[in-house]
Image (cartoon, rainbow, N blue to C red):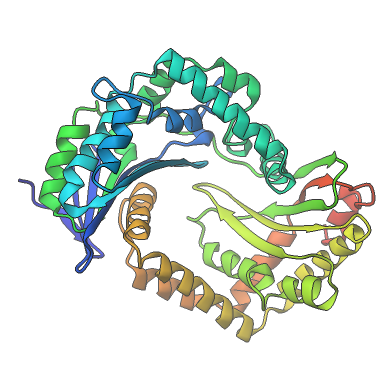
Length: 427
């Protein structure tokens, strides 16, 4: 049995000989175990011909191994009342399961099996590629989702970090089993992997199970992805729709940047709730949109700040004017009461996520991959509380000084030129 090497923020940690980290947290009173593998490899790690491959791998993980058919994978988990899932993002892919604590060893074995023994059968591969093509088509038919993909692509033009996670029909259709195996051998390396578990779990037992399931993956050095560089620009997609969907972007910051929390708080105060400035001006005072929000998406080495809304063709120019006016006013004059409210909202969101085993393992895995340690909640709260009004205003001013990115879809003929928007923002 294996003892933890360290304990951080109540989480026991052990690094296997091949470099994979195991993190567990026993939660009294919880009878289930939530556990999974996080890999620091996502869509930004794909080469151009691999666009969409990370997402396909996530799908194919459940389509059969040397030991289990696709049906048996599902039955082994669901026969004990559990569930199993996976998700792909720009920088991470995760494979998770939730079972009774007494069945944790089984879940570890299944997760290890799909990551190390998947067959990638040609028939299953063809079927799943067709499923993803249907998923792609559904996004194309959903303006609010299509504009989001266009937004990322134009904000990080010509870069993997900006490409849609699903891929494109031509790349999706081109994928073969050997491409999947080559990508996983290159990117799914133990040093980039964390196995995290929380709930009714025993650290030593989980470590032993993970050692059997994943300890045989060769320890190798994965290549670093290309640095993400915000570019700005525009993409206009005129379509015969009832509403115009619009996203205006500006450069954000990495979650490693000292200004990360100030930028996040600026986004929250500007458009993060029913008391935010944008909601009040756009929705409550002028009725220009059903909803509007501001957001900040941080990545390892860059970030993206954005504002999104949907409105009628007639109201689109006015909406843009109000967004610009409100954003400039916020950057110049965020008040202490707004800062206090945004701080409280961020803290509630963070602490609420930690009230579930799933939220706890997600935090542990992501922080270990990003920082090499688990950051105590108290430390994060202290950093949020330390942000000043002056720092938030400075973060807002710096954000608005960047070149804008614009993505719009629908009846957008009246939308202002990008140069006019940039000038109004103060560029």
